[in-house]
Image (cartoon, rainbow, N blue to C red):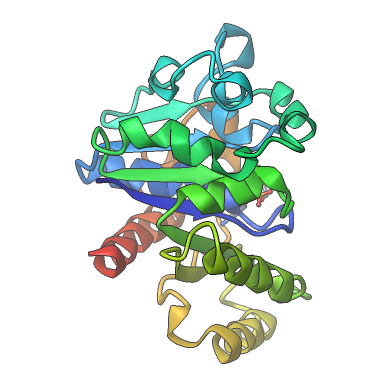
Length: 254
Ligand SMILES: Nc1ncnc2c1ncn2[C@@H]1O[C@H](COP(=O)(O)OP(=O)(O)O)[C@@H](O)[C@H]1O
Ligand SMILES: [Mg+2]
């Protein structure tokens, strides 16, 4: 049974997609059969691998009307062991579509069930909201990974995120675990980054990963070349940080 990790934080620009894509690639390089599910209508994870015009079926078709199985939208990427369930902007229609449906929070969990044995690791990239799409990700997951940007107001919104985690645990998914919090866009030269690391540790304690993801321009550039960091700049600090984070994650889930 796959470990299913939702990567969520309702703030935008904190490194969710960068983490989802490169952590998924790091698992794949470690020979884990890995599936990345793009659950953000912005489709940034999808765009890292494929141009959108070549994609006919997306996760929306799976979740909106059960017309297609998840397996029917999963595409292998050029990274061995790494598959993607793509999204397009059409996913933005999903929330309105699901309102009032009795199984609305369970659509992704149900869709994943037949695929859980085909993968070792399933990662879900989520949009910057705590709406029904993110709720679907949290209900379908075994673990939550929260990227926090090492910047002013880093912790703003974390109360709401923890409240959502508690709410999901109280009913639809009591087994959901907080896997950890990873500091991203970290600039180790600054006092601010160190202060924020302390603030985050005061709140999350040993849930904070030892690994931080340093600011690295290569991480910013690689999606434009349709590459993960491991093919675009294998010797960069970004590749090193995500490889180390993958190791730490695997230790925590096993
Ligand atoms: N460690 C990093 N170093 C430099 N740029 C980064 C890093 N992580 C993310 N970025 C850049 O910051 C922006 C926001 O990151 P992204 O992963 O898209 O965040 P989110 O998915 O949370 O909105 C993107 O342009 C991305 O390339
Ligand atoms: Mg994103």
